[in-house]
Each structure stands twice: as C-alpha cells, then as structure tokens.
Amino acid sequence: MKLLLTVLKRTHKPALSTGHRRSLSASSGLLPLRDEALVVGSTRELVQRLGSQVEVRTGFITEEEEGAFLRELEPGLKKKRYEYDHWDDAIHGYRETERARWGAACEEVLNRVRSVAFPEGSPLLGPVHILDLDKSGFIKPHVDSVKFCGSTIAGLSLLSDSIMRLVKEDATSEWLDLLLPRRSLYILRDEARYKFTHEILKDEESVFNGQRVPRLRRISVMCRNLPS
Ligand code: OGA
Ligand code: MN
Image 1 (cartoon, rainbow, N blue to C red):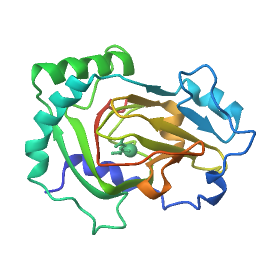
Image 2: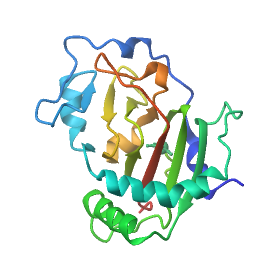
Image 3: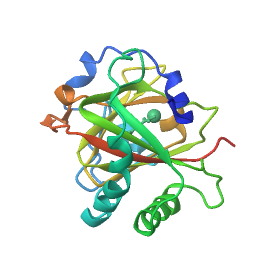
Image 4: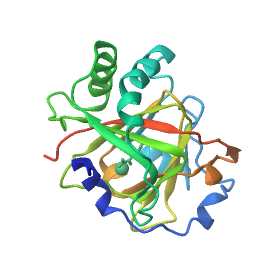
C-alpha cells in the first residue's frame, strides 16, 4: 500500500556529486551562537543567513517521551517490511506510516512541536508522517512537494543521531549540514525548505564537521503545514 505522503518523494532531484562538500575548509561556517554548533556550512555567511530558517533543538523530547512514541509506533511498523528495491526512489531502506490520532503523551509532544514550529493558525497537514529508516537506509536529496506541503517542515528524530544535508538547488557549492541528535527537533522553513534539497546521509557518509556520527535505525516523526 502506498501512502498519500509518498507523493512527497516524487520531486526528488538526482544525487549530486558530493566530493567537494565533504571536506570542510577553515572557512566553514561554524555557528558560534548555537548550542554545540549543530549547523555547519559552506560559508559562515550562509550559516548565518539561513540560520533563522533552520533550527535544531537538542533534547526536545525526553527518553520517556521517545519511549511513548516507540510503544505507539512499533506494533504498526513491525507489520511492514523495509523497502530497498526501488532504488530510484528518494528513500532507500525504509518503511513508513501516518497517524492522525495519538495517545495523550505523544499528543502533548506533538502540540509542543506545532506550537514552536508553525505560525499560529497555520493549517496543518492532518496526519503526522512517520518514516522508519533501517540502519542501512538513507534519504536522497529532494525537495518536498510544493503541491502537498507548505513553508515549514518539523521533525523529531528517534533512536539515532543523523546528519541532514541541505544543498542549494541552483548553486550546489552552497550547503549546510545539520547534526540531528537523537530526541532532537529540527525545523526547516522558507528558503531552506524551497530552495535547498535535503537528505539524510547513509551511515558510511555520516560525518559531521570531521566527526563520525554512527547512523543506526532511525524513526522520524514529521509535521508539515499546508500550502497557502
Ligand atoms: C521526507 C524527509 C526527513 C526525515 O520524508 O520527505 O525528508 O527527517 N524526511 O526523515
Ligand atoms: Mn523531505
């Protein structure tokens, strides 16, 4: 069964040559004001300019809250098989679902996500999108469909740290890497959402600012708003 939300993946762009983006030079823009520098990029200017449209909040959920999500999600996910064979898809090694109704603990977290990520009154995509990446799974560079979702994407990361890479669509030397620690929330808005592709690196390529970040199985819980 294909979910409505898999339509989001159709606009993905082919993988870019990433060689020039892997080595971070001395001019790399570490963002000094942000706690633990979770965002690095091709230049300091880009990190600063895009900084307001890219947020990573460490420890957004507690271990108990992560447990509550896993208890709600695992039974349904376990019934599905990871998909590997559609290698032209934007996502490799994944299973996914969506959920509109949640138990109290998860609903409370989701309300917190909604209140920090979206402008008040902004109509949201009803169901929350859940993506379970196997340890070998990864998400290739893509832009979420502008037809189905609006200016803001907010995602919780469960079970594993990971690296999200943003690359400017029409100028691939401009990039940002976001370190998404387990239990963090990330938010992409506006230019970062529309003009940059985003991807989740595979384990073998998961190096942030020179530091290896092992990628295990990872579940993301994503909220989106509707196009205006
Ligand atoms: C997507 C996507 C990122 C994530 O499903 O379109 O980009 O955090 N997911 O799983
Ligand atoms: Mn996406």
